[in-house]
Length: 131
Image (cartoon, rainbow, N blue to C red; front, side, top):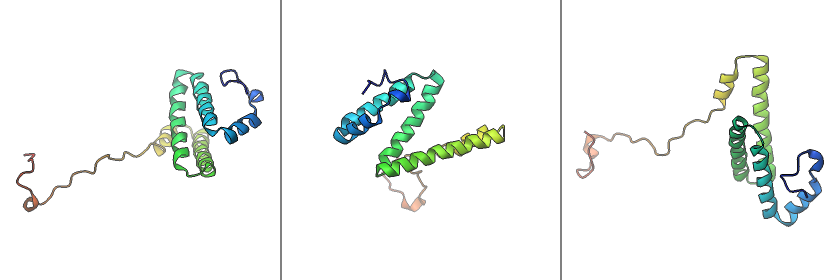
């Protein structure tokens, strides 16, 4: 198997070697997969690198939470199709870029629940007051 920095085309990718490595040494396979992805991202322009790092982070989280390789594959495939549909919409409706990006913006989730004011009678005398 060529080291990842030398594999520059699909012709140099040996599926059987990768499959054997995954079957016999899964930790080594995962490390080589991670390095190969990192090197592919590093070869891109600065602007694309940041976008690709974010996408790879999202893919890694999908893989971690999927429960099985098949479920991960299905989730990643759905992510791809969702983005393709967005691109197709923007191709057919110029000016929709912002709308498509907003549709995929993650919702902010508070790390701590908002404090709810309690009735005055429930207040502990030792509790700090924000008056």
